[in-house]
Length: 212
Image (cartoon, rainbow, N blue to C red; front, top):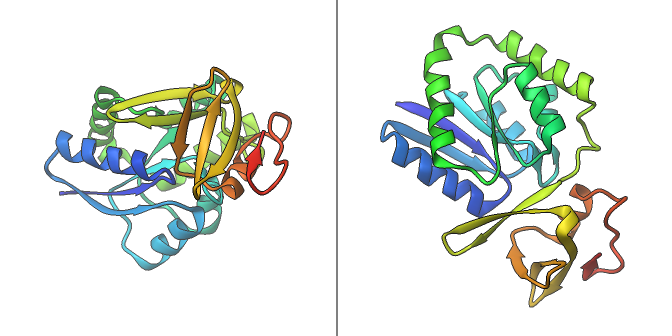
């Protein structure tokens, strides 16, 4: 049995990842689904570590690297990211596996195979050093803003870059992403969360209902 923890602040993305993992291997057990840095730190402090963690980089309350600075994570991690190529080069340089959103099942299967092959060679100190090297070399930290969003429309997943987004607004107590071409989609974020995750050079919150 492979025990896996998912840390992902987009509910639909987390549930989709869980579904794909179980479809790929019926010996996988999902030990939890968490959506924030705070929740992940608390969970790791109070539970036995899983065999593997799938960890989104940008969470609802900050960058997930803060977890490693607070609690020991002595198990392998596969990062999930919507970052641009500069960050992906950092992962490649330091041999840390990653998956780019929106997730593809065949690439997820490849990541699981890498994990199985490297289980015996895992070193927590080596992984921590690679993470710190990546953060220092590419200055990834609190200024790492979202560059794209995975939008879910039925069974279709679309990747939309922030350059193509006109604004976000609240309507009937839900947040809607409006693209520049007029297409709009409900997203699972609050405006407060988006305000922290969007580059202030691109977006500005003009009132309680709009980020433009």
